[in-house]
Image (tube, rainbow, N blue to C red; front, side, top):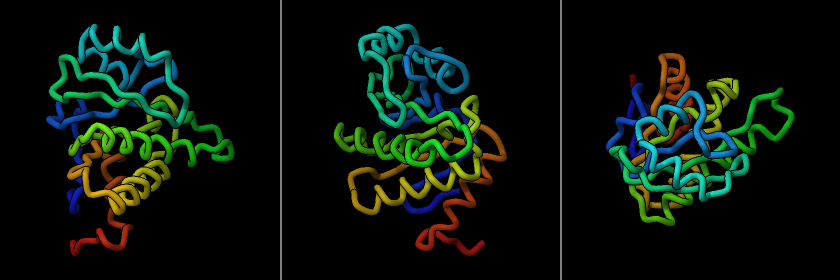
Length: 178
């Protein structure tokens, strides 16, 4: 699904030919499971070495490294919230993840960025809720900034693809006639 400057696809984030991909990392930034492990494996050992110098990352924040062996020039690492019950700032922290990644992309002059579905794997954030927060924050950021030309949400399964597509279609200026 594609609308203006936002695309939603089902695929593998490490195969995206964009200037930056986003890593849904843990606080250590030293690799882990899910998308984090996949990105570290595909990027090679140079990514781990560079991440060691960053001294971790707080939840909701983001840091940038080179892409190493990835097709993307950069990896923007962000730490999403672990879902508890929705009463521990989870929505705010997830929104900050997307905002801070886009802010870094803008700072570095990057025009294309690909996001995974942050926090919806091992961190158990409900994907329908996460998709609405992600799309809302991305649309809000792009509405006030013209520098980023294309944001791709790379979904890992059919459920995520459906949820992100539905969330984008809920944005009035992005509705399509289907």
